[in-house]
Structures are given as structure tokens and as C-alpha cells.
Image (tube, rainbow, N blue to C red; front, side, top):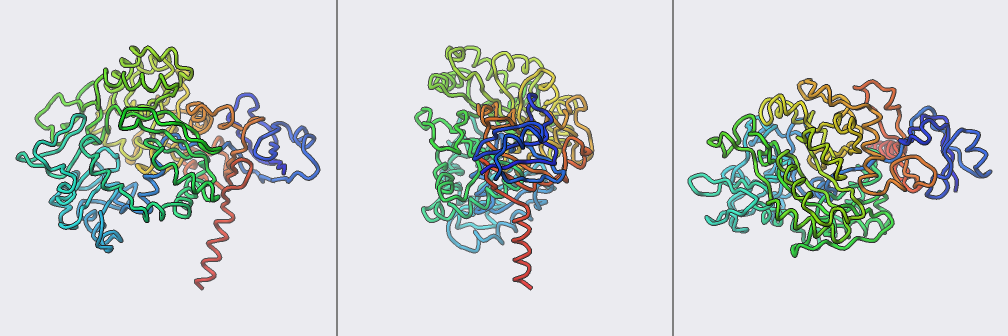
Length: 553
């Protein structure tokens, strides 16, 4: 069936047809974009007319980097321990009480897992240790995953079950925090925390089944509510993709699913996943950690001493692997004709990535030449120049500016480096197509909020963090649509409203290009189409709320 969209603001995100009056959709494709007269002439007699009534039509938003299954688990299984302003927890004591009062604790079996506690936002300003988590339970394992995913906290029982409290357990690429030689229950990076993560994520067959279809479909609905039509699994995606595919087959997951697999334990590249709504993304690697956890690899020392490194005046964080090891992994990926995405927060980590790439024999032979740096938060001007030359594209995490920006300014990076945090302005000036992401569940996937972050660069305290790094609303919108599609090599079918592309469309109640900066956060998604089919509607959602209220009355 044909559909004609008219009487609204149509933001195509394409320079070919920037200000059309109407759009014609047939089946799952956009077949005509132009004046109202042109579109009406091309349409059949039975075409349905969708009157936008002054609202705004855009291409569907991309979740450019996130962790969908982890977000689903954080919503459906883990105890929510996120701190203010992202969540409700204010200190370690409140975290302990939340764990004690959780459904997991009342079940009296299995692992108690919490996600989202952030020492940098907590009033205590510290990690929870085993002595704290033992107050929740001494007989059951208790595991808390830091908001950054780069630190895990565990009680004594969890350490005993995983052997992570052994005196000789000190893996390369991670740190076990100790006091008087004994592990205190705080583990930095996957090398140290991997066994605890496996214990936390371990799902029984019943739990796997409970996550399928309706629960995952509900989480997908949350993404659609934000206008997201392409959901991202930013690491290790092949292992859990079958859950999403099952939901797709049952019609409960209408969004597209970007899968960014990790290398196998044998160091091999996983096979591509088949499916019409599956986007096979780059292979994911990690080069360093988190700035706020002091595990990102910087060129210059952190502004204030790091916990556990107070005696190291020149402490700059650390990388997960050597240049030689990274180069070997990159060669493996490039030989398989796949692209890669590397997590890198610190500029020293990025220096090593560029060094490794410059020595890769297969880089010039790779057909794609479109690889990503995820987060890229402290990238320098000279590094952006090198990235452009070797087709290395940044995906920025601008929520850091609001949520952690003041701490970056005062504690982690200092004023000079904090002013350049997530320097989208520099990337735009150099003509580098960048994307913006929320890194869910670190922060919720809200593309319009990421747009606001990148446009205003306001912190929680109202500080403007880098006036010169502000970008326009249009540039920010492109970063969550056509630029993101470009980075994932699907710009030929997605990311803009153009003839021949898939009809993934979003209707907003206001025009972001004419709204005042602070009004960007108030704009609401009202309709979402995927492949020309209505996938989400605010009207349907309001109707369900009214029916529930009527039944309650």
C-alpha cells in the first residue's frame, strides 16, 4: 500500500533534496521525494494520505553504539543502582539497601547482581568493597557492575566462587585492588573482572527463555519510543543475537539490530549473521578503559591522583594490549574483509591504535576502509588529521559532557583537556563523518538528548564545556542518522529520506531546527515507521494508558 506524507516539515538529512513538501512510500521503500504536486502525481488513487499537521518527519535514528542485551538485563534482571542524575542512588548505604530489598535477594537463590553504581557520582566518592557487599549476603554471591562497565565490585562469596581473591591472581590488562596484599573486592577491566562478569551474566535455560520475546520486545519498545529504528549490540553480539532473532520471527522486535561481534576465544572472526533486519557491524576490540575509573590511557597524567595510585604522580592509566598484539588482531580482522571498532577513551590509547594501523599490511587491501573509534573522548587535533587520512571515524559519547563534565573539568582531566571532551566541533570542521551515541545502559538511549548534549555542551552545573566544540542541530541530527548509517555501511538504504531507500521514518511533535536549544529536550517522538510499517505510535500508547486507568477505576 502507498502512503503520502504531507503538510509537515520534512528533514531529509540529504543535500540532494533538502526541503521537500511530500514523501511517497510504497511497501517498504521511499519511491518519491519532492513537491506536493510531484508526489501526488506519482501516487496511485488508493494511496493513504498521512497529514503531518505541521509536525516534523525525519529518517529513523540510529543507536550508534550501545549494548542492547545488557540494557535489557539491566531493566529485567539486574538491580538498578544508577546514581543521581542518571538514577536514584546517592551513596553506598542506599546501594546496599537497594540490593537487600530487591526481588533477587527475596528469591534466596542464585547471584544477586546490581548495575550502574558510579563512585564518581556517589556522595561517598568510593567503590563498594567486599566488606560492604557482605552486608547484603555472606552465603550468596553479590556482584555490582560499575556504570562504566570497566569496574566490577564483588562480595567475599563471589570472589571465592571465581577464584578472583587468590593471591597470585593479577592478570595482564587489568588490576585487582588490594589492601595489605588481600583483594578488597574491586576489579578493574575485563582481564580482572571477566570471571565475575560471566557469573553475573550466567543465564539458566529458564532465564534465557524468560528474556525472549515479550520482555525483550518491551525493551525494544523503549528504543522505538525514542525514535530509534536501528538498535546496537556493541560487543559480543553473536552470542545473544539468537534471542533477538527469535523475537523478530515472532513479530515482537520490529527494529533493526546492529551486531558488533567480539573475536572468539581462539582469536577468530565470527561469521556474519543472516537476516533482513540484521546489520553486521564491525568487529569490536577494547584498547583501554574509562576516564572516570582512571583506567583510560592518557598521554599526560590524570588531573588528580587516582584511587589506588595516589603515590604515582605520573599515573596515566593503561592499555589493554601492546601495539604488536593489537596489530595482530587487526590483521586477522582485515584479512577476513571485515571492519573493526575499537573502544578508546584516552589519547595515548589512540596513539597506539594509529601506530598499530600504520604497520598493518592488510589496511590498504581492505575493501571497506571504514573503521571506528568508539567514544574517542580525548582525541587531539593531530590525531583527527591522521584518522581522516586512514579512514578511521569517531563515534562520540556526548552524555559525558552533562553527566560527568564537571568531574572531568575538576578531577579527571582538568580544564584544558575537559574543554575538548568529545570534540565534535573539530571533527565537523575537518569534514569527518562522526556519530553520537548513549552507550546504553551507561546512559539510556535517547538520540535527541545526545543531540542536545553536542549542541549545548552544558554540564550539570551549567558550565559550557568547550564553546568552540559546539555543533549545529543539523550536524548533530546527521550524526544520529546519515553519518551513523555511513559508519555501518548502510547509507545506501538507510539514514536519510531519499528515493530508493527503506522507509524508516520518525515523526516529532516539533522541528528541532527551529526549536530553541533548551526545547530540544522537550521534543517528543509521536510515530515510528520501519520498512513502511507503523512500528510505534504515541497515540496507541496513550490509548493503552487510558484503558488501564479505566479498568483501575
